[in-house]
Length: 580
Image (cartoon, rainbow, N blue to C red; front, side, top):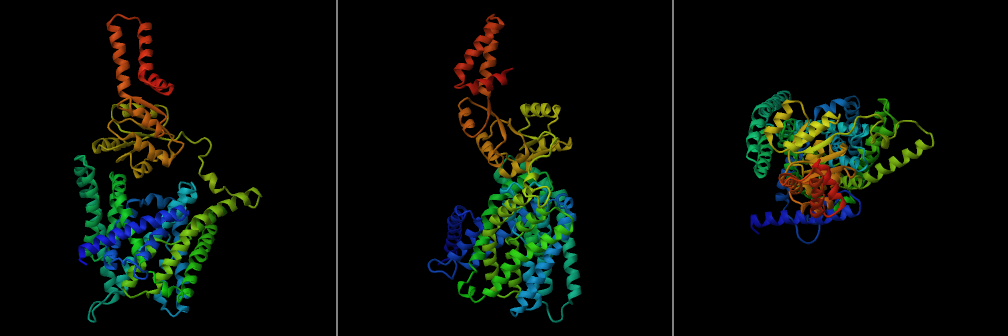
């Protein structure tokens, strides 16, 4: 079989199996990641039928890691970490230390070296970004104190893991007999890291904004997406070739720099589909490594790993949060949310295995622990919330409950509105909102308009409002209303995405033609204002006045035009509101 056919078959089989088993996992109320891991097992060398090319799958997986790390960097905000640093930093460090110690003790008892056990313990200390954010969002806890602590905790874990990824080749890489010692090698590695950070920072501050600005002004979405991918892959490869760092670290730094710029939200939105597709292939490639013939033989390690993930990690987190004088419900929720492993565990284990640090059975233990913990985590979290609510009702504790944190406090200011487009209509509506004490967030594609608003200190997000990622950056989940004011947009798609994120959102939209109103209302838009209808009403009034009609006659004719143009009472009301 030629290399080209093998590549296409591996890609097709991997994505198709991941799709089918991911859908099955979702139907069973499990994380799709479980389906992706099982898909890799199905097309792997340890099951009958088609066997995918492991080398090609590994190359796709490496690309998935780069894009995944770029996405982590895009969403990394130092201010978010600083807000919860008092809990997240010491908590994450203590939990990583506890996991490393438990992993070292358990694996050493099975004949491993202490260093291999420590690396393995660090690998299972890191929770899955995908799983944690999904569980918190599903339980409306992502934007509560609990959610902020858990996400900040996860960021610290990710940063520590990135540091380990940097140092592993230094300690375990091949060195010539007459080469430099460990101290000099470590110093050179840290010097190269400093150089990489400096170059990336300069590029991010001076070159990338100008580059992305030039691309954005072309108005081509395809070119902007291509630019984002080129930057992510280019800096990742450059980090490896020039500075000797891992491509994952270069991708993370690239994402972090781009994420802090005015193009961060749009870059995240445009890179998301590619990132998700190749991240799926990463999990598929991991699933291909699962050898069922050795699972039973390694049951001791697998049980020990599950014990650390489901008991050791949560207990360490729970104890630390309580010691830092946080409420009992917050301690329980954070501990349970972190009781799983995912992406970074496999990334770290892959590098360690490649350097000869971890034995083959480590992957089986990680895959088993990942599948089991990801399946159980949503159920454990929901069960914990129910249990805490019952205990609180019975007077066992009086701490503020997690669910209460999802509701805005009494006397809070009016929630912000999201305004799509900043043309004449959008500008007028934003002024009215500000005059009434409501701070609007503008979503705008024109980069010059975005820069103008930023210069005035007004909140604005650059990107396509039809993207869920852009709407999340604009804060649509906490907004009271969404006003679609720009013409030439797919308002139905924008409304559907917004209402999926915030079902109680009030959506008002502009429409170019009367025939679009019905489709917009079917998409959930409460009020539609048609440009065609408003022009008809305005021209009717002008013509009647030119013919010498009285004000009463003009209004009567306008009412008649309303009845002819609009099919139902809602359309009449919308037109009436818009015409006065």
